[in-house]
Length: 452
Image 1 (cartoon, helix red, strand yellow):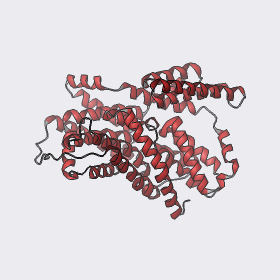
Image 2 (cartoon, rainbow, N blue to C red):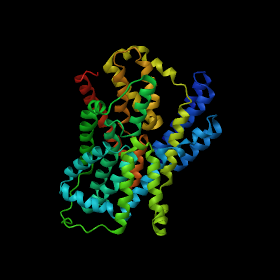
Image 3 (cartoon, rainbow, N blue to C red):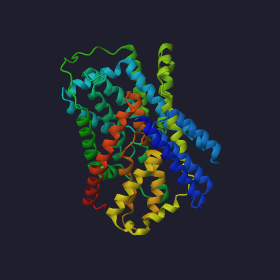
Image 4 (cartoon, rainbow, N blue to C red):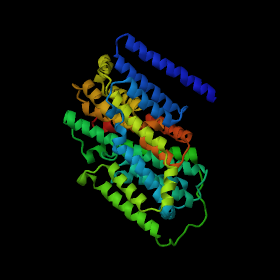
């Protein structure tokens, strides 16, 4: 089976590269654009199929982008200077600190006492927690870094540790929910922030917190939350241990107090980012330095040995890939609207959601708004439902089919120690259900409120 998979991927790679060469030979795209599209296609295929180790693909991207294109090196390697890159690094430190100090298990014990012994209730509780935290914490990476160790601590206390199916279901709900449910909260994730910034700067369209939440809450939170909970329950149904839970927790240890102080300070800076304007990544880096510099040498060595460098390489490479795609002229895509469908609001909604999903396959959810927004704005410039068309992208980039489309989900899977095949299956199922359930419910809600 693996051999057949490699053959199929090899044929697809050759076919894709040949297609790009034909476009260049016919003059539809320039030679520079052909090289860029070839690099993007090859890297996306290899990341998605995982037939080659991820760090090899990332390093290959850097090599090909630098040697075969004229894109400035600073843009290609811009990922290493981004806040997202350092959020991933600091997220690993936060998860390590919570686990090593025992705080994750302590918080898990408290949750176990509140949730009780129902697996379905546990899934519902973690879905609510994932959404609630998005209301006050602007970083998806940060939310995942905090919630995954706590969820793992709960699983350990509730008898769902080790290889139990129920553990996978809860952790996947927390990871995917932290990203997808936050799509309904304007400042809660990077794609939302980028979209809001582009809309304001280029079109003068301002989005308010309350109006945005009202627009997306029924489908983006209630329906999508039900999809995530239902999928976790059906795919990973399990029973919570009937062993008695610890009723009288002991006092905090010195290590727990130290980590608690550092974490509370970090959360304080994250919650007040609108006041001090320090990017979440730099706040996380500050926590990392404070924790590692005040830790015993053995813990620093243990963290270094467990650090997953391939994920960091991926984040840097995918940001560089996004910068690369910006050097491709996408105006020919405007011809898609010549068929007249752009004059029908419902058809426009369906097509634009599909376009947003396709863009996420190419440049991931973080970069999708920067490419989608000008495309939709040009397509619907003279229509009465421009606002609807622009906001439809949220349904697209909040529906994840493959983990690499959303770097936070990929990060969460690595942090939780989940197999990539399990993460892939969960994303594929929830993505398909989101397309079949959440997207239509959102259309119905927008029709009721007069947006569609």
